[in-house]
Amino acid sequence: MSTMEKKIEVERNFIELRPTSKWSQSGDAYTLLIDLPDFQKEQIRISIDDPSNTLSIRCERPIPGDPWWRFTGDFPVPEECDINGMKAKYENGVLCLIFPKVIHEEEDEGQEDDEVEIMKKSKHEVGKKVQVVMGMNNSTKQLILNVFAALLVLLVLWMSLSHTMRNNNYLEVVEE
Image (cartoon, rainbow, N blue to C red; front, side):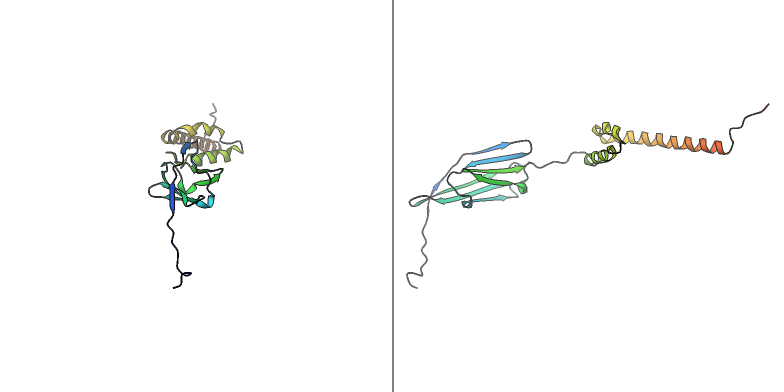
């Protein structure tokens, strides 16, 4: 093997960086800001370990002379974050990672369907008073529906009997 074909391996000398980082929280997301000046976005590697909810960031870049700058950091991601929805951007030396919050379903899973149904009915000016019922729990809603159904059944029976009695002359006038 000639000297030209030999692979030259050079061990790099690293200067470990400890940049500042800050988590913040808004109504619908968590944001992690990390100060990484003088890096190019191609030099930054981001990975997430799903089971442990850990964000790993690795950066390396050469500086004039022999050493390289390196940053390796692991950040625990809050449980309420949707790690699959993470968005990252690198601008002006700051790495910004945004994690949307996981939306927890309400105890009453049918609430959204009820609201959609009300909106459909409201277009035709029907069902607007049902909106008052939406803030109640399921047992109260069920009780109101049962009472309404019973009243509806009584109304139909009354109308049916009234119609039958008129057609069969059950209401006879007594002559003296």
